[in-house]
Length: 31
Picture: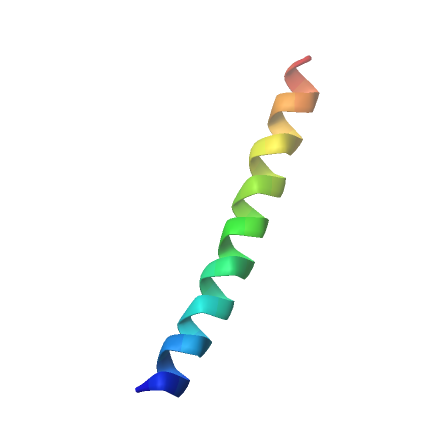
């Protein structure tokens, strides 16, 4: 169970980083 939670946390962090980068990309293009 502990191993599964760590894996999920790592994946969640990667997805958040990707989402943030995508959010910043269009924002900069609009400006």
